[in-house]
Every structure is written in C-alpha cells, then in structure tokens.
Amino acid sequence: MEIAPEQEAQIVRKAQMGDHAALSQLVSLYTNRIYRLALRLTGSEQDAEDVLQETFLIMIKKIKQFQMKSSFYTWLYRIAVNVGLRHLKTKPFKYQHVSIDDPDIERVSSMEAQEWPAIDYDHISRKKFRKKLDSAIEQLPEMYRTVFILRDLHELSTEDTAKILNITPSNTKIRLMRARNFLKDHLEDLVKAEAII
Amino acid sequence: MKCDPKLINKVCDYLGGDLNSEPCQIIKEHIEKCHNCDIFIDKIKKTVEIYQKADSCDCAPENVTRNLFLKLDLCEPKKSEHSK
Image 1 (cartoon, rainbow over the protein chains, first blue to last red):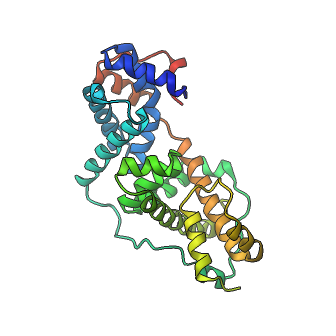
Image 2 (cartoon, helix red, strand yellow):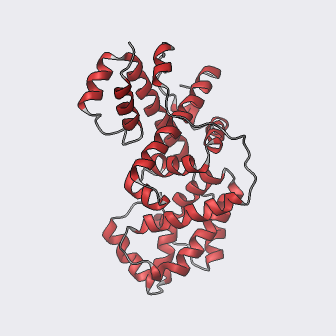
C-alpha cells in the first residue's frame, strides 16, 4: 500500500513520540520493499531476513533522530543499504570479478543488432528464470548493483539514489548505465539460450 | 552507419538517466536514422522492464513478516494495512 507523503509524515511524527501503532504501520508499509531490496542486494533469503530485521531495529532505535529534512523513505533506504552492504562484507563474493564497461555502441552497430521479440511475461514470473536474472545482479559489483536496485527496481530518482549512496548524481548515472548494459548483455545470452521473450 | 562518438556519449548519458522520459532532440533525430542505436536503446528498456517485472514477484514471506514483528516486539497491523 502506498500512502500520501503528508499522511506518512504524520505517522512518522507519532512514531517519534513512541506510538507503537504508528511504528507498526511504518514497518508494515516498508516490509516488502526493504525485503526485496535486501534480497536483491544479498542474493539470499536468509540474509535478506537478517537485513530486514536489523534495518527496522535501527529504524526504531533512531527514529527520534530523523529530522524530516529528507523524505522518510530516503532515510530508511539509507539504513537498509548500509546494513545490507555491511552484511555483504562478511560473506565471500560468490562470483569472479566481472569487468563493467560502458556500452560499446560501435561494436553493436557492426554486429547487425537484431531486435528482441515481444516480452513473454508468464516466462518472467517463473522462479527458475528469475533465479537466472538474480544471478546476473549478483555478478554486478556492489557499486553498480546498489544503483541498479535503487534506481530501476525501486524507482528512486537519480538525486535520492545519489543521496542514499553518498555519491554525485552524475556518478549515479554512469553506474546505472553500466549496470543496465551489463544486465542487457546477460539477458541477450539468455534470449539466445532459451526463447524467453 | 557509424555513430559519431559525440552522439554515443549522448546516448550513454540517456541510458544512465530516466528511460521513461523523452530523449533529447539530438538523440531522437539520431535514432530515427540509426537503426542499431534504436535497437540498443530498446533492449536496455526491455531489460529494465523484465527485471522490474521479476522483482515485483517477490514479497516478504508470511513467516518472515511474522518473525520481524516478533523481533521488534510490535503487533502486526491487519492485512488491509499491509504494504504492496
């Protein structure tokens, strides 16, 4: 459920005064979003649950310090990303380091690029296929993965993403462009391997 | 057709921004003439769409939500108040 920003601000103020019902409402509002963020970031359901719990424990502990200068979700997402990244540091990286480059459009031009057919949404919702998509996200180094998750999966603005990650908006755009290009290449291989779209 | 490197930079800039927004006039004019860049941008857009669709299939399992509220020592609001 989405609620209006003014309504959310009201709930936040109540939560800051120690209102348990308001805290529950905030947790409930953001559970799915933070879980999905943590799942994509860590690539593991168990880790996602740990990140989810720690994020909200910190939220409850620090909510009185939130000064309403930014939106509540920016503040909460920043906590979740920091918890998630800290969590990742304790785990060995599952994949070999991959090279993330700018799109080589000149090379594409010379390859007689072929269009992809229409998207088959039923195929996308299959768990087996989604696992293949997830494995590509997991191969992205953190600095690209976090930007892709926040900008494209959670549809945050370039500015909010930059604030959360403490980077510049132009750096956010560069990282996003490279992440999208990497995932496109990965998907291109999947398209060739199976008739998915 | 070989793309002008300056145009490639502009296309790259667009690819790191808001894909739902209209590209600038220079890119629009270019992709009208350059089939490969047009396809390239379309593939990037489809990639994002596919990942968004796949991501939306996931939500916190019931036991995860239950454990969360237990851990936080809070009462879970009724279903109708749940997030998307």
